[in-house]
Length: 257
Image 1 (cartoon, rainbow, N blue to C red):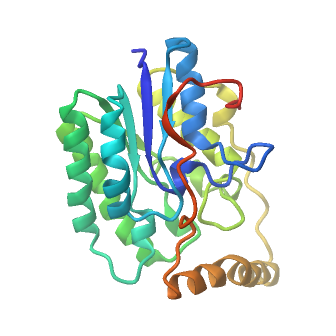
Image 2 (cartoon, rainbow, N blue to C red; image 1 turned 180 degrees about the vertical axis):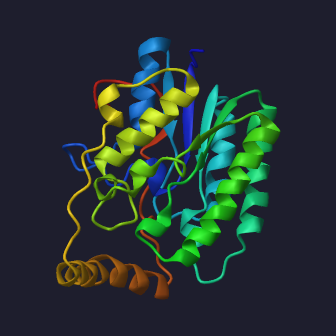
């Protein structure tokens, strides 16, 4: 099936952190998917990306759903809840209920939809987050079955346990990680992808204990501490960020692998 338009909703995962273009802006899996889809759909294909880093699920629903629906897209992706899972107090079951409100609205328009079962976050982050993520993942699968949405199962892909798939902050995907997500999405849609995107290098040799602890300390100093400080002050990384593609627009040469 050749969709004529694609709107991506979400947070940093969909905005594309940390897969940078030469100018420092972010590409990510959604841009890659849009570029590949445009090859089949032709010059009339339109792509919008409303995702903004740091957004909670409720903010994504409140700020992105109505603009997305107003564009009357043929395909919508929705990935949210990761930032909520990092909060000390969160009810993941309530998040799934809010997700359903989005899926039902989008599917009622006749648009197709992409949902995600997220990669195993316990590779890099505390097991508590894994329990919350499991509820979100189970919810995405159930919603996909109920509403006939495409569900991209990243959790089932052990390649995301490879450190090469993650950026130094251990939270966002690396360029290789984004390409692998794009490959999974395109394969799920029946479009097909560049085989190179699915390649995974051999696992690195185990890091000696002392060096590994040193790396943990650097990560805590450079990434964890700033995140904690920002949230204690009530700030978000997306406060002054706007959507990179707020309206449907043709996919041009600025989006490339």
